[in-house]
Length: 403
Image (cartoon, rainbow, N blue to C red):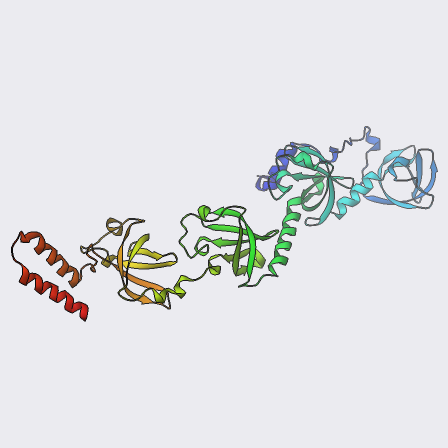
């Protein structure tokens, strides 16, 4: 297998050109006679010694003279001026010369992979663009024309563009260019320059450029984007990013981190919202009872939203008076039920909760047992005087409340 078979760029170029000779893109054709073919395409320096009609005579050195058409010069050359030529063969003792080929050869000698060149688009084919670097022909695959897919390449006809050389095959007279590489470099530089103006903790304004399941990308400036992860969108729980922010929406966010010269910027919209935990001490303490909503189910229990931005954990052992082997068998997403605060760790913003039974008692506690006993006695009394036993149960409950 040849090296071309292993190179995706080569494969793309070969498919686009389908055997076309790049040197024939501009309409040039091989010489008709072997006598006029050059055996040596190296550059030869010569001095103009005279101009007669359409012919320019050139002194090439000891006992060597050549002739070239005046049309190969931008303006009629003057006696004594020196130029580079290529030798195309001899005729009647004179060397047939070419400046076009000399310019082309000079261009080839100067072209290297990675160098930047100015090229003009001269044609379009299904695989990309045909270009000229001065007199030298070149090719640009369609995937290297722009940062995004271009469906109509004809809009680039006759346009001059700055390109990067990505392949040079002198023996095959092939040079491959990429405009995308230049645009990427300019974008990266703009991103780096813009990132230098950012600091962690600063607040920026931007426009939502893309929405994904994991968060939203925000364009801070041209070529500079940051990501607001779903966990940093809001202090409220965000289940669907697309319902919380929309493409094109203007937003404010705080810079969390800057990595890889601005290629990765972390943003937070949540950081700019008031923290509900700052005032939560006035509303929650051990023993507080409140209605909560199940927002996340885990193997070890459920997270219950007490208010936007404040969740608590009901451990699996606090979900039912009976043993729970599988959390989802006891509760479901979005379900609401009363809970009681067991403990609060303010430093880590964690609240431990217990589910309450239908009578507002802690599941599995003595108060729940007493309440259950009272209910059972009431249901089974059927008019029997249970005042003494009922009074004892109520007395026990009141004593525990006093403690």
